[in-house]
Length: 230
Image 1 (spheres, rainbow, N blue to C red):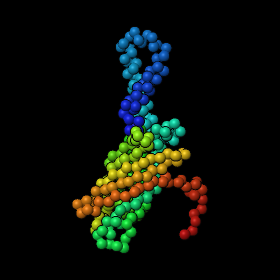
Image 2: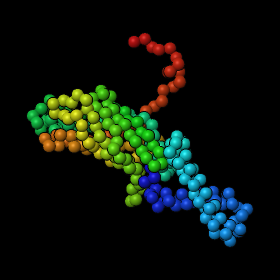
Image 3: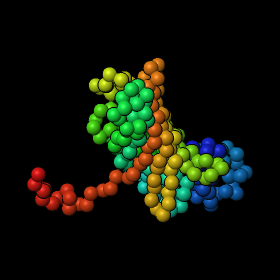
Image 4: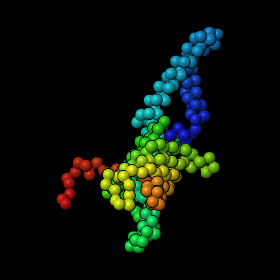
């Protein structure tokens, strides 16, 4: 997630935290430290180590996604961690029609779930189609801010695995997606396009539209109340 503010701003934030810790620990001896370079360097080194510890604890733990929900923080880092219901509209139907199968619609829709794990220094994503035909996990993820429009983009490359592929499919392929992240009135939505190299040597590589909707939490009484008969 640090890509949203960039490396320079991340380094500047680290410097500010280091100086704040240094000032807090040595505010009584600042004048004396200026006259003793060795002690000054030791104090700055200790403050830098503590700042790194703070960045590690806050940025790489469950604290970070909680901070992302705060009004000021979410203006920089959108709260994307959690489980999302995903809808995929693939152009596979159009490909099939070009192959002579006129009974299929141009767009094929599939539903699935994506779990996003968000930290300051890394983001991971795992996807599985509801029919369990295939599952995917990310190879690399980047969250960046569009300088011109000010919007946040979630860009990722993923690897898909299919245990029992159809004749026109393959057991493994790569894909990529470019997703627009919007945070309006406290509600985060994501949508964009994806494309794959699935069976590219046969001209069967696919592309399409993908949309995310955050999975709604079940009320507590749904877990502990009596089960409905089936």
